Length: 329
Image 1: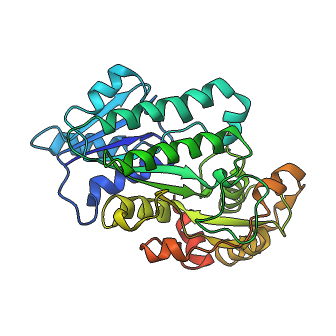
Image 2: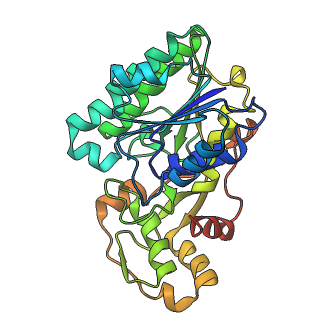
């Protein structure tokens, strides 16, 4: 089975690659080729380069190949789809904040290139499973309460608009039985390393990293800010579930699922961090609320995730488990 991961050098992509090398896709045939695509493979964060090198060294045949370049470029696409692809994880994107500042870059990477990728997938003789990392940004910044998979998408930023277009095209290609697609609407994933430039929700990871390292941090939202939380491990679990056991024939025509999340305030997260790291580390966190960031990322409504749970998707379970997982990444 030939599996492709775009954005394989990124935060989520690296973790997905490690799991694919360790376990494969649940319920699916063993991997025969794993093609990893990114504009660069550099550490940190690691792109699983060490695991890739070990796998290549011990494999009887070349299982893993690294493709460096633009995943929408014709030459790269020719390599990607030779041999034909069975499962495609499309994770690569320019994050929302950066895409808003650099419109041309976001338009190219988040809209035009994915359409070329999906078009090439649809041109194969076999029908590939396509798992698309979409975003809750499709809902916009002024959100109704509650949200479910039937809530109308009204993106308020270019990033969300481009993700929504990708969902629509993937759903149409699936309707035509040219691909077997599923779009997963992801929240902010924690805990990203460093400052996570370009991610408006970077504070969600930064507060955890600061407490973990005993550093001072000024959080741009108030303790009362409510967010949707998912660990990297949970994210990868859900991506693999979408590629393997999921029966996509039962999905709605939109083929889009808003994943289950934990819903907690920053204050509740700080309390959980204090239980793990001590109150002194948490005391180094102060707040200077930015009205725009709080309105966009800190006023998340209730989420009705019953549809996603019906299809076997899951969140981290408890806030303490979320913290444990997030602080291990």
